[in-house]
Image 1 (cartoon, rainbow, N blue to C red):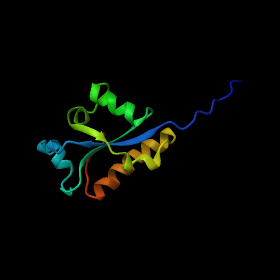
Image 2: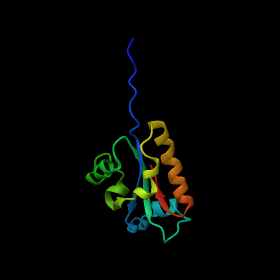
Image 3: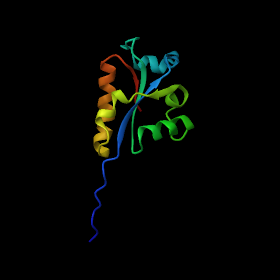
Image 4: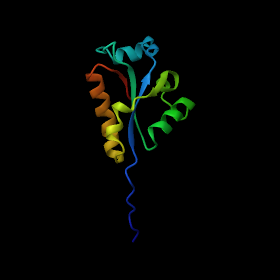
Length: 112
């Protein structure tokens, strides 16, 4: 009988600030009708990598979200660092919950 290995929690949620030029895209604007123009546009994701590694992959076009690849400026750790790291299931749920919470606060959010 094989012993099941207990891996350490290594999944993370992350938030990327997007260039406000992304608001020129009707699809992004339509997804964020209640945005606060004083708050940044953001992308919320989850990864098994560090947020820094995942952001670099987005920018390099590796399994990239097109908004992050084209408009990603920087990570915003103040919006997510408190939650990391966590198990996969928790990160999957947190990605959605964080996106909803930020949108409720007025951020223009994309989460795929």
